[in-house]
Image (tube, rainbow, N blue to C red; front, side, top):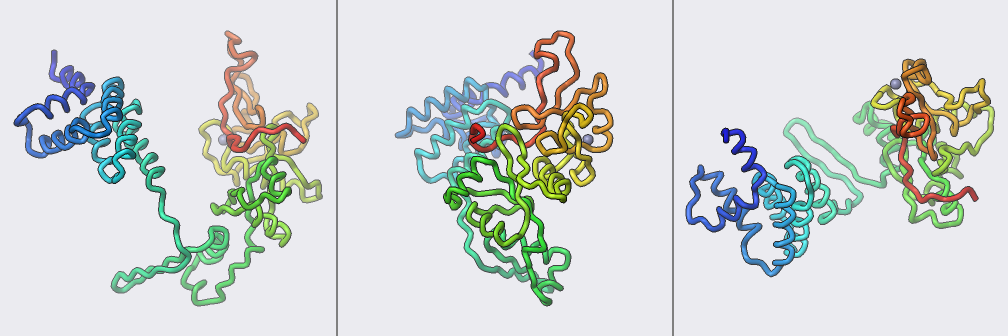
Length: 342
Ligand SMILES: [Zn+2]
C-alpha cells in the first residue's frame, strides 16, 4: 500500500482513530495534533448519561466514514451548546450528515442558528469611535429603514446634516405576494403574513394594505399555479408588467445567465404571432442574446411549467421525457400553499 493509499484509508476511519486514541496512554503525534485528537475523543467517547445519542452518533459517523477532521469540527462546534441533550442532538445530526468536512461545517452553521437564533434587535442607535472618525449605526423597522437608506445612501453625511427627508412615496418598492396570501390579507389575517419587498425589507400584510391605500408603491400578485396575475389593465400596463417580471426574477431567466433584469427584454413564452398574450403569465425576462437564440434548433426554449419559469432542453432522441428533456427550473420557486383558482 502506498502512503497516499494509506492516507485515503485513514481518512475514512475517524471513529476508529478516536477509539484507539481514547484507550492509548500516550499518542505518537506532535503535541497540537495529540491535543485535538484527545479532546475530540473525549467529546465522543467519554461516559455520558446520553449514551443512546452517543451510540447513534458513532454509528452514523462510521456509516458516513467521517474523517478525524470532520469529527474534530463537530466536537469543536458543539462545545458552545450548554444544554447536554441539545449538544448530543447536534452531534448526532452532524454525524448523520454525509459529505465533506466543508459540507458538514455548513450544516453545523445552519443547526447552530436554529439552536441559538440571533437576538431580537432593539430600536435605537450605536456610536463607535475610531480616533479621527466615528461610525453611527441605527436600528429600526425594516421597511422604514429601507426608505431612509434609499434616501441617504448616496451621501449619508449630507443627508444627516440636511433635510433628512425619507418620503416613502418617492421610493417605488415592489411587494412579492401569492394569491392565497392576498386573499388571507383581504380577509383580515394580514398581521401574521410577512411579505418580501424588492428593496430587501419585509412588511406585514396589514402594513401592505396601509401602504396600498396611501398610494405608495406597486404590488404584484403571483398565483402559485399560473404565475404573475395582472390585476390592472391600465394604459401603463407594460411598465407595470415589466416590474412584475422583474419581481419574478432579478436576472435573465436562461439557465446560468446572470445578466441583470434591467438589461433584459420581455420575452413571449408563446409567440405573439401564435396567439400568445402580452401578459405576465405568458412572459419572462431574457437578455438580448438568449432572447435571440430561444427556440432555435438545438438550443431549447423557455416555458412556464405549473407556474414556474424553466428551460426545456432540445428534443432528445430517446424521448424518455416526452418531446423534451426534463425542464431546468430557473424562476422563483413556489413558496406558498397550492390552491385552486377560486
Ligand atoms: Zn441571458
